[in-house]
Length: 421
Ligand SMILES: Cc1cc2nc3c(=O)[nH]c(=O)nc-3n(C[C@H](O)[C@H](O)[C@H](O)COP(=O)(O)OP(=O)(O)OC[C@H]3O[C@@H](n4cnc5c(N)ncnc54)[C@H](O)[C@@H]3O)c2cc1C
Image 1 (cartoon, rainbow, N blue to C red):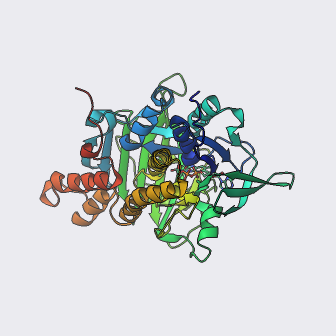
Image 2: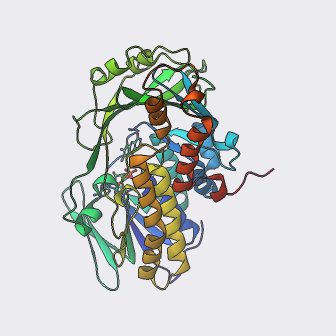
Image 3: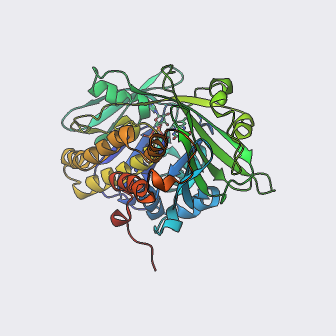
């Protein structure tokens, strides 16, 4: 265990999700004390797949988590784009195959969460995460910050620390308290259905496929666990996205109906995947509206700051929701360690670094995420099968869209350490 620095700030983290747990690990790395309050009493293995791109996997690797991640995740090797007729439009290597020093992990959120939780318990101790503590308000004066939480028996408890980092997700209590007049989430006009199926390997068995376009139905398909049945089948994550004015509420574990979107994919029988069969073989469908919120003018208010989805909820179109929370975690720990005597200034410095960076990602996810490649193909071909794609859009043009997103989200080759030769 890393010894805690005496006289250094103690940190109370709200929410033991991906961002909150990673923050606890980062604070431990720099020798600061962390306590986490989490609303759920017991973590359930809900949710589906998440991608951890090289900028975030570098951070998790530096926390010593690469072996655990590599044991359960699929190390993604390529990113592939098809039109809705199953024709290949663009392909590029990903993760280690693209020359990064760190992999792209395609992983079940529950697996990622369990790895982080195990590491927190191992390094910070059993009582570092207090479950069954639903935070209802945060307060501060010029000496400390507090969070008041309600427990399942109805009792309340107030926990104090030098600073509070609110990583309490899309319905953040801290954000609502700081910005009581913020409007409802902004709907992008696209509904998303998600699920997992046990399925034979698709393409390389480590391919991230994006296909179609939102007007007629778009799919994202990638494997998240290898050999789940002893016969080489994988757990394959799929996401169906369709433009529709009808939307549901924002809840990661809301169940959906296959019948609401299967018709969009009825003729998607391709040699690389029989999409209707894949979708129909899924036991549980989840639905989620593509929503985000306008970037905030400030996250850090005295001894309180926001992190992850609480700070920058984004439409999940660039595999960057978890990744940006992981980058926030590194930054807030580094800032607090750099100015241990002045935690208010440290939180301000964290805000100065991470808010502009994530604002850019939120806005780019609205307009030009990587799937803009599919939009380009859809528009330039007039949504018809093509004979020669090069006549309407070149591979260089499509590559530029991809490279632009990498630069904005922070995982261009130039921004990351190179792979050793
Ligand atoms: C159950 C669940 C399933 C998810 N499934 C997927 C998925 O399949 N695919 C995907 O891309 N993203 C999923 N996400 C979202 C994804 O984890 C985040 O977008 C991303 O990782 C950023 O992480 P975060 O820590 O900011 O938020 P989250 O990972 O959402 O973590 C927020 C945490 O705060 C806790 N919390 C909320 N309110 C309070 C409160 N008042 N007091 C105390 N604790 C509180 C929540 O229970 C949660 O543990 C899911 C989130 C959750 C909570």
